[in-house]
Structure formats: C-alpha cells, structure tokens
Length: 421
Image (cartoon, rainbow, N blue to C red; front, side):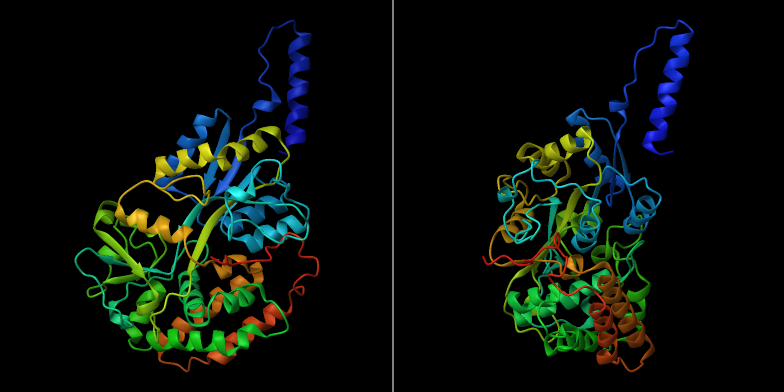
C-alpha cells in the first residue's frame, strides 16, 4: 500500500473507533518507521542498527547485496525507501537528475568531509548524498610473516574471486582502475572516470594497455582464471576470506579495506601494503590511492528521515558508527582508533592524492558494461581464447557514447573524482 492509502485507512479506523465511544492512544502517522535500504548484511547490519537505535528514531533497515535491483523495483512501484545507502554515485546522480532525491544542504556540512568525498563542482549548487562509510583501495593484503617483495607477483600468488550476489565482475574493475591510476596518474584517471572531453577513453592507450596487462596476468594460468570466475570475492559463507581459506599457494589479495570483515577471526593476522609494486607490469610508484564510500541519500522529505540523515552524518554519529563497527569515516573530525593496520588505512584515507572508485562514478549503463567486459576477459582467459581487448573496449565505448555528453544536464553528477593532495 502507498503511504497515502495507509493514512486514509488509519483515519477511517479512527473515525469508526470514535463513533463507538472508545478511547484510544494515537499511534501517530509520524511514528511510521524510517525505511532504509543498504548493502550491509549480517554482523555489520546489526552494528549499524545498534547505532541507529541510539538516535531514538523508529526505523526499518533492509540490507541486500542485490541492492540496485531491489531499489529499482521499489522506485518503479512508487514505494522507494526513505533513505538509501550505496556506493554508486553515478546511480544516485541519475535519481537526483530525475527529481527523486531531496537536497541535503541543510543537514550536514560538506566541508567536514572534503575532497574527494565532497561533491565539488555540482552545477546544481546542491548536494544529494553524504558519505557515511569510507574504504581504502589500491592496497594488497597478505598474511603476517609473509611480506611480499616489491616486484609484480605471478597469478598463482593471487587470491582472486569475481563473484558477487548483485554485481559480479566489480573486483576485476578494481584491478583495471588501479592499473590506470598507478600508470597514468590522477589527472588521466579522473578524465576517464568522468568520460570528460572529446577523447574516446575506452579506446585510449591508457585504458587499453592497463587492460592488456591484467589480461596477461590472467593468461598465466587458465585454470586459475576459471576458478576466479566462479569464486565469490568474500570466500565461503562460513569461512575467513580468500586470503586465509583460498586455494593453495595464494598469498596476496587485491581487495579494499572492507576485506577485514571477511577475514573474521583471522583479521588480526592480516597485513597490508600498497598495490603499485605488485601489479602486473607495475612501475612500483604509488601515484595515488583509490577510495570508495557508502553514500546516504534521501528519497523522502519526511522530517524523521531528514533527522536520521543529519544524526548519521554528524561528527557524533560518524564516531559512534566507526567505534561500534570498526569502520572508517570520511568525516575529517572523526579521529581513527584501532590497531596499527587500521592506523595505516586511516592515514592513507587522509593523505596524498585519493580518487573515488571510477566505476562507482560512471553512469550505471557504462558501469554494467565495464563489469561485463571484465567477466568476458576472464572467461576468454580460462578458455584460452583470443582476448580481443580492443573489441571489448569498443563495446564499452559504444555504451559510453550513448550517454548524455558531460555537462549536458548532469546537474547532480560529481565534477571531480580525485583530490589534489
């Protein structure tokens, strides 16, 4: 039922009750729970709900790995959640440009977050999302006591999984993005992510050579490539992640800081290093770090939903969330706490050039084509077939070409992807 219909039913019931001379306590319409759709499930969902309970605002949280499909279904049925939390800025920008998102200008101070989290350069003059969780990429995990060298690692050393309930292939896009970022630097990376200028970025040497380097790594072992195609990036549901439960011989995992939650009881034995020296054909130089976030946005103008966003985005809300769940905040006022590994992650999240995950910023159609091209690359490597990298990239470029030109109506889309320092 729609909210309007539920309210109508409620009023009718109250009129019937009044006619019968009964005295009741109003369960006011304002007490309807704030509905929240996010990606966090299991333990992290429980920790998030604990933080929300402290706000004293009734809520109902739904966590799912198939979030984009669930959200689209809810929007199409006319019953979107009050709040959505997701990494896809390109997707949120499309909802904002369709007039479905409420501006958040009055509910948090973007300067508390800074670049690249702050949506700098939005031509609409409004902000439509706030980062409520931050994660670091451009890192490699290894087991304590097994520190890697400073040269590119062979495929047999990597723990790789492409599977995901709702978006298989995205771990492969992290490899491509990291290769482009470390080889070409933030300026080229940003232009590619935004599809800026007249350059056909998917057909450019910058993207093609990065893709070919990754394909060359996969072709070292067709069986390992096939295994990666069929393996969930989180490992077995009851396991401790690929780094600790993966195939024999895998000692390195190219994964974001959120991997700590996959490692569970073995997380205390996990260590990290910068990815640049270990990437295929890597030059060893760290040009920047890729980062990602989970961004909250409002589909509703309900005061309760606005208050919940305001509380969650505040310094106090972000500190409570970080302390309760051991996650990282993009709010510059929230000082990190934890062990040495978490200290290293927090330092990288605040220092040096940082660039938002490119596929998260891209239009959903381009992002999905990116995912598909990654999976096709793996499938061809597993089968020993011609990779046809130029052909795959031409297909993605066609999808990019079908999008609106940059600046043509993209009032909510981010205009910057990388910080300068």
